Length: 240
Image (cartoon, rainbow, N blue to C red):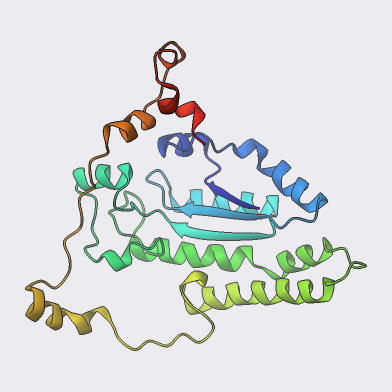
């Protein structure tokens, strides 16, 4: 079960318009998954505008205490096409011009409390600390040792924990490559080619397309007294 936890701070979630996230039920999710033999994977975002280094450490410790089987970590990235991206662009906060960097593994905007180097260090610290030897042992203890396939599953758990720690040691995101990635070129290698062919070095950062009237309507918060007057097909409560 993949859960987009993002943050344990309710005010942070509300500011990010993720009111559907309920930190108070995360413990029950982990417990129920364990009871029914389901793997739980909690996805986390660090580097919200309100975050300090201490906040990230506290989030990590809370996550470790909950003890989901797996976790992944990403740095807050305003993705082109989202409302957050538009807000950050309007405020002049976007500092990265290379769209290749908008992959949630590095800081692409001016954070009020944390530098790019600090957030990168925190990202890899989260992976190292979460995937500790104690975490691997706890996962193994929750396996039903009498059922079939348990040896292969225990080997997979151990390998995954080691792989995540290895990536953190190499300072590469676990989802950015394998054990021995091959680097054949760098972005700098293409500047001259782009300049000759297109007259640019990097594509300008895009502007978001305007939503259609129907999509704009779906994104609105509809009050109960308004819903009765909406056509059924445009009622946001009917779309999941």
